[in-house]
Amino acid sequence: QVRLVESGGGLVQPGGSLRLSCTASGSIARINDMGWYRQAPGKERELVAVTTSHGGINYVDSAKGRFTVSRDNSKNTVYLQMNSLKPEDTAVYYCNADIRRLGTIDAVRYWGQGTQVTVSS
Image 1: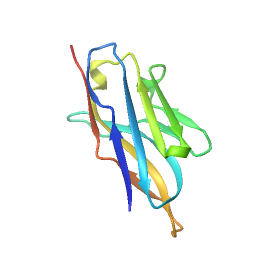
Image 2: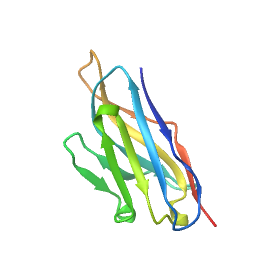
Image 3: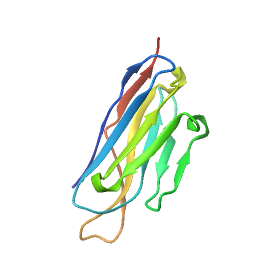
């Protein structure tokens, strides 16, 4: 079994900051892409930021310059530092990782349970 556990969500005022963390645990052989999606009420889930196993990073345009994704491979953990938060950043944030389990050949995409981020005064 593989689990992704997120932490760090909450309520913050506009202009504030939050840091999300997501740790993968279980019978992991390799983690490929690892990153964050979000889903606001009434909207589709969208990619926020992703890191690749080779160090590549991609952001959604609305996150560029405000959010920073980083990864600690020794801890199987990905972080999302969110600065200058806006009300439109309000959403449930989901960790996502492409993971190959021990004893298997193909990687499978896993999701965390989600953590609520609310930006409001």
